[in-house]
Length: 394
Image (cartoon, rainbow, N blue to C red; front, side, top):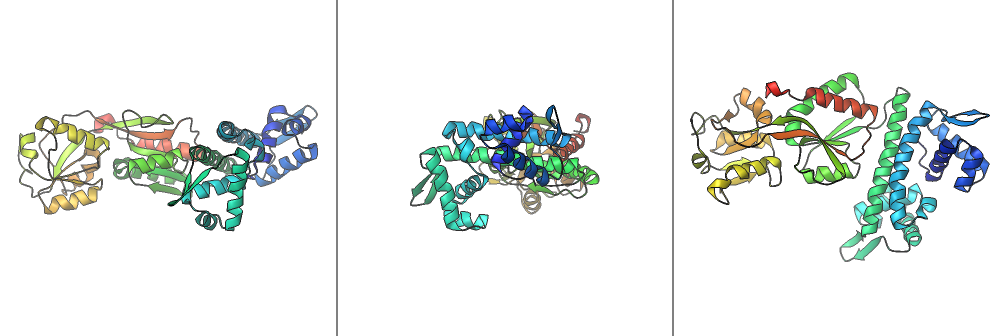
């Protein structure tokens, strides 16, 4: 792992840009031996030379270039936040202090934060206090409900998470350069992706990268989006939102999907033809929760019949629950055609004779703005693109 010392990383950045130990020591206000020591410690931590030394100066090796790209990105994020709160943090803030800040922010409790970090509670309290003294304002408000982060603290913590994410990405980049695998890929998966595109993409990825850990997370879209924006999730796969939910993410289309209305095999409408909304509306339904693209299209489908129709609705994004409920009752389901395709082909569900007249849903990737994937993440994205259904198969 790269040495997580912000001062050493700033020294590395200065040497890379100035190509001189003397100029770097002046910029960073440290002695030249301290610069040499910082570079040496970094090179030992990455198991290789970061610079080629010559009479003309210090020039980055290929390994050094990989590290430089990530360190620059990390400090661009950090220094922007430091500048908004207290520019002097660029000099004084340490990784230990910033880790304590994140832990207290997430747990809203000094004792729990200390337990998470595996250090003493006074150490955590002192680290946060030092940051508060530096910015000359409280970063947390003490309330009867616990410790609540101020707006400035939220801004700083968000930046720190993303900066640390870049350093983790640097670990992965350098490991890949040496033919090793470090880290993991974390994917936020929405229902359709879990049953259609993601299994195929994961199989292709695993054939090329047999040992790199991959974590697939599911949950409500808002939770996955939060994880993405915090750097805890690398990218999301599923139905895209129109418009994009927030300005710091980008959406990349993969393919279009459409909706289908399904029933169990014994449903009264299973063999019916020329169905109308007036016949469908009186049955109970299983549909995704409010706020999802499918639910929006479902509500629009029945809008002409008046508000609040259909009257009987169970909200769930689980196709397994839908399948079992439709099998033992007269419930109907509104779901992605691709998501239901396997259940329909196996005879578990019946696609009713009703064409849902609504725009196709766009399925794709959601990533952070200006995200730079590692080689392994880029391979996973390529696998997702190649696994996406072609228009002629829909």
